[in-house]
Image (tube, rainbow, N blue to C red; front, side, top):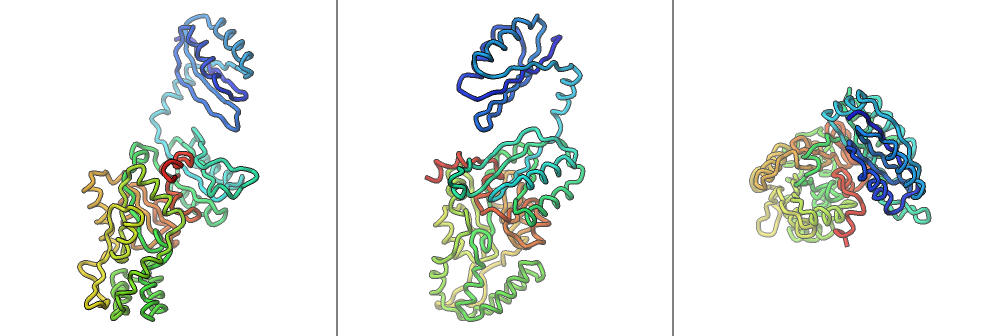
Length: 405
């Protein structure tokens, strides 16, 4: 193979362009070394890298003629063998997926993310839009704007890059996630959720405390525990003891009024349609997890069993308290039971007691979390609802339509 040439095609897209040009190529004894195509707002960009040993003059003439007939421009760029060899040698470099997600994406946010990538010595191979198109007359019709960057190379300072991405959430209102692009990332199979302040918008124990008339006392302890200022198990016993004597009849009413987090129903419809296994792993109560299990189609619920005797809450739980370590253990047990590699697992939580579970999973997501959790978790979602998780597994908006109808 003596010569290498990149064929570049650009123009207004229409059906049959690629077919017509490859028909021309098929008439000649050449090798296709690479091919890529993208269409942005009906404008086609097509590249074909070819190698050949024969006189290519007739081929180039026929391609130029076909391009003229099709209304597209065809250009040719010679490629040196050493350039091609260098390109081939880079195929073994690690690849990462960077997902940029917001209610709207501005040019400032895009510039910040691309500069962060460049400063890490990484190269952008491809950029894909995952969210739906935004109609000019109905800009609010689209909930999110999301683009996915496929980048190559190892970051020179991974922690620094993650810190930069976290800062963008607070300054520009965008979520930016960073994942290694491997076979496990493309084949997630289990998603586990914390319940309180993650899958639902409230802390159930605070709702119970309000019904028992001790709301302020319990809420204060809850907030300190979620910030990691108090031992979870000790604080849990302290809060639970304040509920002693509460009439168990209030549990059903509280369950029926639990406010789901934004995007939860859409997310579960898609996950269930795709065959994912799902779990609620919570330091809250089994009673409320079971209610959500029936409502959303969850496969597993692992939580504390609230003790009720003679129709009254005793202020105790049955069995071991589900603390941070137990949550991580539950996640591993479910994965083992289903025969799922932990690298195929996603875990989602907001509190300090979720961190061990997030670290065990292949993809740990701090969802609208406390600062300490955002800093220590692998990735964070703060701007988007729970259905933003779909973008992190590479699902496009148009692919979810059948699942949510």
